[in-house]
Each structure stands twice: as structure tokens, then as C-alpha cells.
Amino acid sequence: MTGIALAVALGSAGLVAAGTPAAYAVTPSDEAAKLPISSFGAMVVDSAHERVYVTDGRKSSGPGAVLVYNFQGQKVGSLATDHPASGMALSADGATLHVSQAGGILKFDTATQARGDIAYTPYNTTCGRDVAVAGGKTWFTETPYMEGYCDRPDNSALLYGVNGTSSVSTGWNTQGRLKLEAGPEAPDRLVMGQAGAGTDANPFLTTFDASGENLVRGPSRRFADADGKGALDLKDIAQSADGKRIAVADAAYGTRLLAADDLADAPAGYQPLPEGAKASAVAFSGDGKYVARGAAASGSTADLLIQPADPADGTTAMEFAFEGALDGSRVVPQGLGWAKDGSRLFAVTSDIHGGHWLHVIQPPAAQHDSRFTGGLTTTPTKAVVGEPLGIRGRLELDGPAPAEPLKVTAVRKDADGTQEVAAAKVAADGSFTVLDVPDRTGEATYTLRFLGDVTHRPAEDVTVTVDVAKAPTAIELKAPAEATRAGGVEITGKLTGQGRALPSGIGLKVTRTDRFGTTGELTSASVAADGTFRIKDLPSKRGRTVYAVSYEGDALHAGSSAEATVRITG
Image 1 (cartoon, helix red, strand yellow):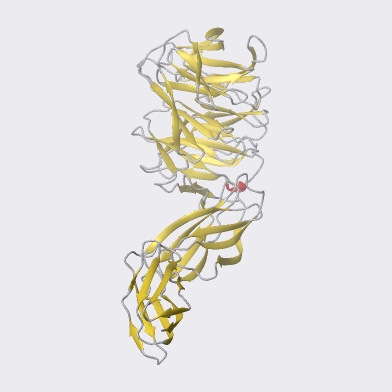
Image 2 (cartoon, rainbow, N blue to C red):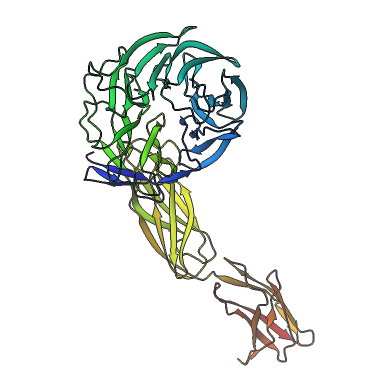
């Protein structure tokens, strides 16, 4: 896997991958969902329910909402808040989403989306908060100011905990702003860093043990050297899947990789970000395989790198350059999040005009080949217009079995153009049947596609061409074996057809042939709505008489005929 860039269309598991050069612009238009926000607060990924929660972090009053998206990047709902929402965090069991708004921390049930109790905060601030869950408790930062004063470097920054519906001061405070990080990697560890404290400050990073009643501070670190150079410009914090490493997105340095037990530099760090890129976000995949590093960069300089979490792995990073009006131009601070199994990375990007996008990216290392095998067969062998046609085949997959049933899609191309056909589920043994009802006669070509899934690449398309015939019809006659010239002949019958319904107002041709071979055409028989008809005749000659009834057919139905023989006496 060298120098690979990849882009994923939302709503599709297919990948677009390329080789060198090292970085690529993401193809615009269908690779990101446009978010209806002009600022960004936070993003939380709920893998259990396959939901992505996004807040806009507006520093204003009035009602707000948490936007809810599925793992395909489609908006599926929202959670109403009394005021604009900012920070969020999931409980350790994933059952509760904690959301910050002015004046309180809200709870939402992630299964039902129902809103629970509110924990009131000491300040009714609109500056926004970071929220984290560690040691089974909820923690949040507090910037006790209002819109227009939120980002001053000399602001007070406080740390609080939640106790029921109340908040409790931890006694920890500083200046600037505070950022929090916690998660299942080390459930009792809370990581806190100082940000936005001014150019002359030497911001800190520290950890806390949150397992007890009170926070117990662990190792801490400031990064400036004796000359005041190298100070931390904190944008994001992440913990590795095994809890042994802490990564920091430092806009002044890049991505710092630290040992969690003492915050010392890890023995091996990540390669520098591309020239001109400033670190803005960092996230480890839950399966421990990858680290994603976001940045703010201009032009074709990469804004996102995805690479092995182990810095000793020399695999070349995948580099993405977000540019243009349809996918943003940079990864926002704290704008990266992974699905727990590492199958998807979610990235929020923005541009200079306040536009925001949600990208869904799948690492190619999780992708395996797929292929159609054994050719395609049709049932019935002869296709008929207006009748179901089954196209049978088999899909073969490398790698692990899919987590959920896969689908094969199909299109039909005939003289009327190209039409989509309903997708077919793939059985556990790889077999599938695409069903269609062709609606015109003539040649029809079916193209079957497998667009891939989280763990499988798309298969090469396969096609089959069928000749669609007119639907057959049949005439059934009931006639007496004998009749007299005086009494006449009465014949009843029924016209039936496959496929589409027969047209109304059909007249059947009726002929009579006597024993001398003389044939005459009788009055046509009118077919009722249920297909039945009746024929009455007064023959003039005795002996064997043959009545022939025929239907000439129409655009969708073939013609048919039937005969009845009656012996005329008397």
C-alpha cells in the first residue's frame, strides 16, 4: 500500500483509489455531505447505533440542535436543545449522549433519542464547552463569558464535574481555554490541555485519574524550551486504542506522540506533516490499526493523512487534499472520529466562507477483492414481455464474510433506454437472483454490479443479453359434439394471455368450414373483460363442420387460434 489516495462516495461502499503522486485532491460533488452549519462545535461517533452526532457550537442564544447522521453520511434526524449545543461525549457504555448547551449539560438516550435530565452549570455562558466521560462521571470545561469575549487569552478557564443535576467544581482552573479527552481506551483517564492562552504563554498538558471521588492529577508537561520556543498550540487530543499513547495536534509543531504514563516523547514519532500544513485534529481507530491526522493547508497540500498507528510501520501515509467549493479546504480542530471497528473515518472540513462538510472515508487495508463467477443464467430460459425474469449468478468474496447481507444492483438497457432494476440480496453461499419484468419486446442487456462494502472492493461488472418475446395467448373452446340446422350451434370460449393485461374491445376472427371444404367468415366474436366470448351460428349444410377462432395478437401479445368440430344433423 504505497502512496494511495482514496475517496468514498456517500451512500456507496465503492472506492476510488489511485497511485502516485503522494497527495491527491478529493474529487468533488458526491464525497461529502454539506452540513447546515456555519461554525463547528463537536462530533461524536456512536458505533453501536451507527450514528454521527454534530453540533454547530454557535456562540449565541436561542434554540439549537444536535445534527444526527448515519454512517453513509445521510442526515437522519436531530436532537432539539434549548440553546446552541457545543461539546458532547458518550457514556462508557454508549447508552447516553451528554450535550453541552448554555446553562446545562443535557442527556439523550442513544437508542431512543429521548431527552433526559439536565445538569445545571454554574454559568449560563454561550462560549461553549468541552465535555468528556471518565471514571464513570461527566466532566466539562467552563469559560464564564458571553459572545464577543469568549476567545480572549486572559479568560478564566475552569474544570467541573457533574453530580446528578448539579455541577461540582474540581478546583482546577487556568487561563485561555481547556480541551478534554477521555474514552474507552483508558476509561479512568481524563486528559486536559490548555489552549488559546496567548503567544507568550507556555500551555500545559496533563492527565487525571478519575476513578475516585476526586480527580488525582497525574503527569503534566509544558513544551517550550529554555528560550521559550516550542510552546504548545493545542488543537486536539487523542488516545491510542491500547491506552499507552497520547497524540496531540499541535499547530505549532505537528503531531506529537507521547507516552501516556509520563507524557514523554514516544521513542518513535510520526513523520512531519507536509510543508505548510498546520495540525488541527488527530484520532486513532478503535481497532488500533490507524491514526488519522488532520491539518489546515492551502491548495493541493494534504489536509489529512491516514497511516498505521504504529510509527515504526514504514507504510506510506495516504494523503488527502481537500480543495474547492464542494468539499471544504481544511480539517477543523477536533474534526476527526472513527467507527469503533476502524471501518470508517469521519472528517469535518470547512472553508473560509463558513461552509462545513462531513466526509466518510474507508481505509483500503480493510478492502478485499470480489468477483462474479460461473456466468449468469436466466429463468425462464425464454424471456417474455410482462412476465418475471430471474437472472441468477454467484458473487465470490475474498477476506472475511460480510457483517450484513450484500446487494447486487442491475440496470436493463433496451430500445427505450436504460432502466434501473431492483437490487438483489446475496445469500450466504454467494448466490443471488435479480428479478425484473421486461416491458417491451426485443433485445435487452442486463448489467449486474457489486459496488463493494466496508471490507470488499467492487467487482467487475457482468452482462447478459436476452431476447424478449411477445407474451403467449391461448383460446379455449367449448362446443357441442352435434347440433341441428334448425337449432343452430352455440360455442363458448375464453381468451387468456400471459404478461400484461389483454387490451379491451378485442374481436376474434371466426370461420366455418363445411364437409365440402367451403370456408366462410362469420361475424367476429367480441371478448368480454374477463376474456370470455360466445359464438352463435345457423349452418346450412349437414355433416362435419369445423369452426376456427383466431386472435391476431398485439404489440405485447402473440396471436393464437383454436378449432372445434361439430356434426350437423337434421
